[in-house]
Image (tube, rainbow, N blue to C red; front, side):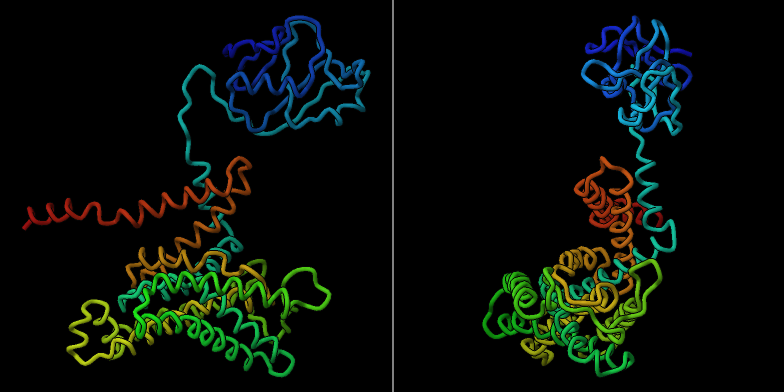
Length: 432
């Protein structure tokens, strides 16, 4: 079956057509056709081409300018490959030849409106996140960071505090973790050094969150303003320390020396997943126990729901503000454990990579409950890993487009969760 796709303005003697699923270009007279220009004619015809199975018949020649071209006979149908460069054809100059390149052909007849097909990108997104052991490992690695920051935001939310300083707290927590390893990796064994480094990460993250907490509790400064400003302070501090103090001798890159073997967490071969995922699971359990099974956690939630009732019950709001923010900062600091002890094995810049801000969305989607946060973190981790695979496999898919796809998925799966509530309430009301 032949379908005419039109003649190109730049190729008055060339006709592009689709015959039985193959793109054909037919010259109407003797002539020389430049391979690159021929490809442009195929694209301009409206045919969507990814890769083609190609057979080019004719004589490869060199023109007066030294360019390689394909000389054809009148009315000889042929197709040409976009992957066959002129340089590759040059050794064939002067002799009759047939060039064949095999691949996949994606096209539909021009003239019929093509319906967009979202299945290939979605398939790549899913396979990129869950299609292999390495992909699953990276998904869980990202989910570990999102779990830490999501829990950090949730603890503050339950106390009525909006902590958006998780980025800076994770940064400083990583600094504490790294300093502990740099100081002790030549002295202590791993089974003793790792717990010390984990405790240092929590301590430094909590200390960084304690300053905005004190300003909120005793000076009335808004926690949103102080925590977000501390993100910038933390970033500037890390740059100064790595450029002027902690940089490895002789290194042109602002990073510390590598950690010793004692300061490295065991990891999954071929993946960034490491033992810090166990720490994330323990944190989920610990936060649930603290908030719903202890008097302090009950007082903290009471303060968040009704500060006046908490005061009436004898809760010290200033002290509880400090407790909530320090716990939040300590949880965010564990991001440094996953990144530095588990992956980079040295102190580097920008390892927090936006996890602190993403933790806000994770906490909101997880409804500030540890189980919900763990599930939301898995979704965000899958989107992070699958999006990276999508951008790699589809050259035209930019990172910004992947972020838009991720945002839409988050929008429809999380932000619109309350949309069907009135309809469901009406249905259940009628069934009673």
